[in-house]
Amino acid sequence: MIKGMINRFNKPGVPARATIKTMKLINIPAQTMQVYIKIKQFRNSKSTQAVNISEDNTANWDDQIVINCRVPKNNSSSSKKTKLTLHLSFRLVDNSGHTYVRFGTSEIDLHPLESGEYSTKVQLQKCNYKSEFICTVSISPREIQNSNIPLKSQDLYNSSSIKFETINFP
Image 1 (cartoon, rainbow, N blue to C red):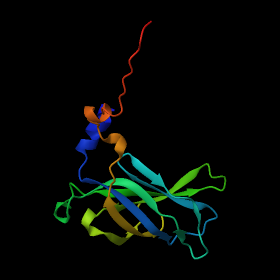
Image 2 (image 1 turned 30 degrees about the horizontal axis):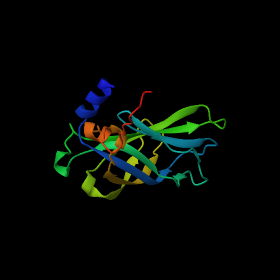
Image 3 (image 1 turned 180 degrees about the vertical axis):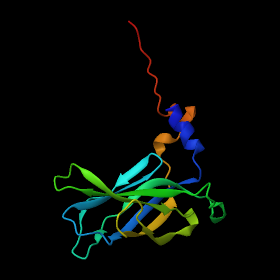
Image 4 (image 1 turned 135 degrees about the vertical axis):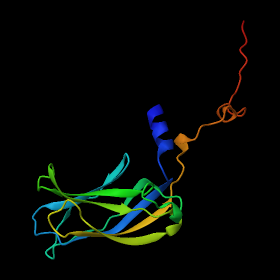
């Protein structure tokens, strides 16, 4: 618990929520297997549903992925040291759905909160083919979770919530 709190304060950037939609993987060799994406930053990760590879050697995802992440504070802080990205791992899954083979990886650069929605196109790394990934990313502020907000003692022991009864002894 304490280690998690320390790690949370040492991470660069500001907390945000990234929504990735209109995802498309192009120039995939003909496969009978399905493909899915695992998206990760620090300890946060999400996976898409596995989709079939179409006859035109593309894979399209209709769903969107929302992941908690950290983004740069502003455009001027986008130096190499503070570059914040989402790591994408593209995986081919067999028909049984139990085992996968990594097809390639990629990194999506994250923009500051004020940037709004933007499209990106990246080439897959560690891939034997010239496959490319296209998507739309939107960055929004992360909502505060009530479970992480410490309560004040007067909130816990509000006088209207405590009732006293008198007990009469015979």
